[in-house]
Image 1 (cartoon, rainbow, N blue to C red):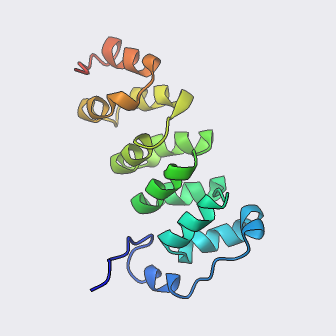
Image 2: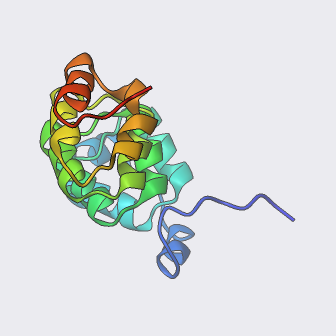
Length: 151
């Protein structure tokens, strides 16, 4: 038996990946419809190849990754690129804990770190588990305002 592929998309959508051909990288970097097609129909391997060649999904596609709670694509994307600040805010407001944690393990939230710790939907356990990824201001807020023992 061959290796099992990580699925970028659930269920029926994955069968489209078998037919998807990666377009010219130059056009893929510039054209939102081509990026959308890569996200919707491409495999993780094709996305990895595109990211390695300098393709970064635009904010619209980043938002789709968050809204779709697509952990596999977020893990791959964050291995190469940062989310734009507006999408980091969107992820903090709307993303699942698992999605946020996946991003945090690979990238910094920068100034949005404060937004994360101020958002009460993230539990003390979540913040404790991810304390190593928080900046000093966010850590101070956790201790002084949220009264979380991070040790």
